[in-house]
Length: 117
Image 1: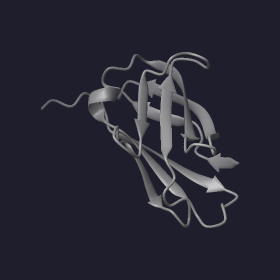
Image 2 (image 1 turned 180 degrees about the vertical axis):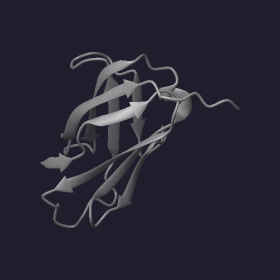
Image 3 (image 1 turned 60 degrees about the horizontal axis):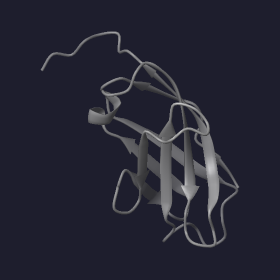
C-alpha cells in the first residue's frame, strides 16, 4: 500500500492538517477502518504524539471512497515541539489487517512574525 502524504512543514504554535490520500485505491473504500497516527523524534523512538479516529481523535476519514484522510495537529500540541525534524507514520490497526499506510517527515519551524493575543 502506498499513499501520498509527503514531507510536512509545520509552524510552532499553529494548527496544521496533514492530508493523506491512499494510492492505489482499495476496493470497497476505507469506511470503518481504524487508523493511528504517530509522531516521534526519530525512527524506532517512542511516539511523542499518538492520534486515531477513535477515542484519541485527531484522525478523520474525510472521504472513504476517494480514501482521503486528515490528521489534525492542534496548536496547543505544536507549541510544545522543539524546532527540528520529526518522523510520522499512519497505520491501519484493525485486527488481522495491521499495516503501515505511509510515513514521512515533518519539519517544525518558527513563524516569521509573532502574533500577540
